[in-house]
Amino acid sequence: MRLKGKIALVTGASRGIGHASCLALAEEGATIVGTARTKKDLDALVAEVKERGVEAKGIVCDATKGSDVAACVAETVSAFGRVDILVNNAGIGGYRPFLDWTEEDYDRIMATNAKSTWLFCKETIPHMLKAGGGNIVNLSSVAGLQGYPSEGIYCMSKFAQVALAQSLDREFYTKNIKVSLVCPGGVETHFAIGDGRTADGPNMKSFSRPEDVAEAVVLAVLPRERTRVVNVILRPMNEMT
Ligand SMILES: NC(=O)c1ccc[n+]([C@@H]2O[C@H](COP(=O)([O-])OP(=O)(O)OC[C@H]3O[C@@H](n4cnc5c(N)ncnc54)[C@H](OP(=O)(O)O)[C@@H]3O)[C@@H](O)[C@H]2O)c1
Image (cartoon, rainbow, N blue to C red; front, top):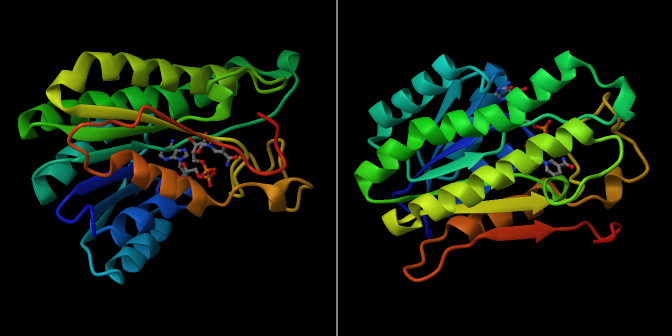
């Protein structure tokens, strides 16, 4: 119970890595606020978290919309007083030859992955400053550290999360706001299924599990007086570095 009393806000909590991160943070005693667009999945998450003996709340929120994000953070603070841990996990992907990407794809991917991260940081940091600190985790990717073919726009959005994390870390570490990156390779989730991946695709069963990534999220936010975690890179066993 190393996070007992902490308030954790996790985006993209309805399934996959966000869902697993909520459960892992709850196992350590954190109160969980999970956000996504799908209410029934959030209701199921809240029940699962409460089974672990901690408080939980689901907030329906489109992470690409400033008004939704502001309302979500305000509702969290009104319910629990502050946000100690923010996990910017909501995201979408897609694999397509470069010349097939459209302007609509660009806007959708950048808004979901990059703009949402900025919006949640913008709304949450004032509360962290008021409370004397906090932890932010940007769930980027190995595709935020190097470019991959057929993933051009996705890579741009994941590099943006890395850039923002580095910038915020340098701006706020003296205020006790610790900003971490978690950068997985392939993870077995719904991510990009129907948009370049299939549920029974050849690599899927060799990918990392969402629980493996959730452990890295917990590692990044455990309280440490003299250390902050800057970047955790994870690779499934079938992937080269
Ligand atoms: N799976 C991988 O191989 C992999 C590898 C490296 C990094 N990542 C990163 O890990 C993160 C989580 O992905 P995942 O693999 O867990 O995928 P996933 O299973 O598809 O989950 C994505 C989550 O994001 C939410 N979401 C999508 N659009 C949203 C929006 N506009 N507003 C609010 N929530 C939204 C979804 O909820 P709703 O649909 O209910 O809104 C869902 O909870 C992403 O940022 C992804 O880039 C994944």
